[in-house]
Image 1 (cartoon, rainbow over the protein chains, first blue to last red):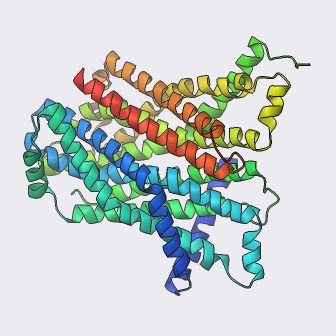
Image 2: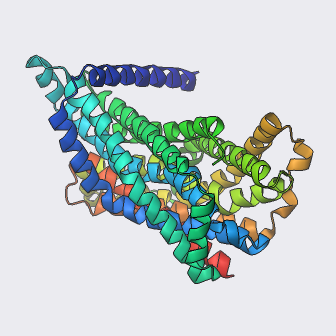
Image 3: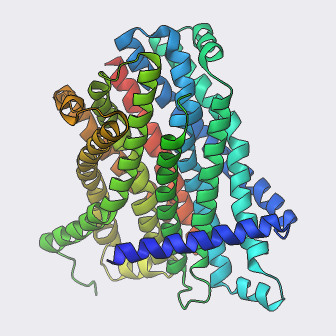
Length: 254
Length: 228
């Protein structure tokens, strides 16, 4: 019963934040300077984690493809299968986990600290709205970072998969690349981008909402901030896998 | 004068409490995550197979192998890094932030033995239990999706005979290594943090470390498995 209540409470809270963010952006009230600052900071923060993650995920994608390549002698379609995994089926989801781990947890920690140190109360006291200064810019910034990160990371994943296939399976890079050019439709990259945008939105909303839970509450200790980060992590994981399933069931076949 | 240390029975109770936190506390999230990923994978595999080959018969043979070899241990590791890793880092960082850790050491209570060692044992054990459980969720998700989307009979889809003992051994070894990496990442981030009072940043470090370690260990296992 308590789990069901928690799910309903969290879903309601997230929908409220989504409405606030969309309204703020649509009415042009989302603070642009703060959004740009947070996007720049987020890109710097997550770049190394995402790059390391992309290389490792590319290796995993390549080795998965190599297994099928060996069993079915499917040399011709290896590049296509690797691109499908890197651009849509596996890459965006695992990259979203890396973004959630680095940027999501940091976002919750910062928002929770703003709430615990009464900075949000101060913003209200000055007559400003935290939705336009904190909630919307943070959510939009995470979406922008996710979108900007995806193309280079997806290419890094694909190239790493090709290199692994070359070193471990003698699969020529030219054949892999030809397979991508021949079979992969450009819409696949757009589908991956739209998935990353949805994951970014889910991470931004979930982690900001978890941080704001400390606002106007008595729980303001260091331990409470840690607990908020933990709640934000759980919200991010749940949101990423559920959004991924929904998009997979609704999406195309590539 | 040092206070009395917990005996072996008390230590086992601490271990069981940690196991309860890791396994029972993460079971719902692991089930939802693995089920969602499994359903998405089965659906995409089914649609690709129909588009390219016009036959979905071989998916039942490949699907459990994909789960055991790759996605079940990896998803459990990522969930543990983001859930248990975050909580454990926050707990240790808070102990350091309010000097409780030093106070316990001064009182002779050895916090490494009572607070950290049980989790270092519980996370690898719990990861194995969760991964084995998640295999059932993975297979069930595949069965439901293939039945619902393509009308494939569950009795023709389920091929558990492809799960060889060596694959199951790989599953357990991967899970234990992932669990250990999450625990070590959390302890390292909390105990080596230059800003112990900044619990939020410390938790971020712990989660990132645990996630990247799990992904890297997974790649190392995959390379070893392919070469073997």
